[in-house]
Image (cartoon, rainbow, N blue to C red):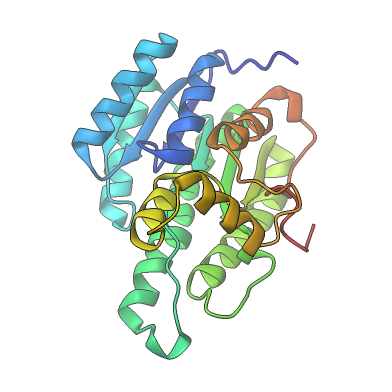
Length: 262
């Protein structure tokens, strides 16, 4: 299936690395103009330059800490000025913050709420009016399996991801009459910078490949392997396109069968 995003503008948070970078590259290769948002200016510009080189697409890198409401507003304005109204929003920023419940203080809770839930709220609120006015829009929230199936010591991430899942359902109901479609992608174990850092801190005495296999086995991934960022990006690209024009209010598991909840 050929998927085209020609004429569309996409905003992707956490776009300088991992899942965000893979998604931005896939969207650009499919014809979209892409704005990637992240905190590290050097990594952001390198990512933007790589996407431009590999796809020839229009790409803007915008430095923004999505935990900050003022920065989100300024960033949205800069992207609209450079590329036009945002047609596709991918809320991807975030990392896996978790621990023993008694050890999670208010500051950690607030940081996770601002980074994952409130960033999605604020960015969605910024792009929603233009999407409704043009009667076309896509919002995709990147979640994880704990949004559907929390486990011990997965707070605060499981809580903020579950709240973002609920946000997506509510937005889907409001957006549907205006052809603004909102969906989520529930990811499992994906090769990423976070995984590499986990290997560097906990993988002494084994190769990275052995570390990956052990992770898949320990977490009960039926496919017996980790996913690639590009596999997630392919599903995101489908949901962002006209090929998914009757899909809204759902969350798709991209996890090799790991999550017990569909």
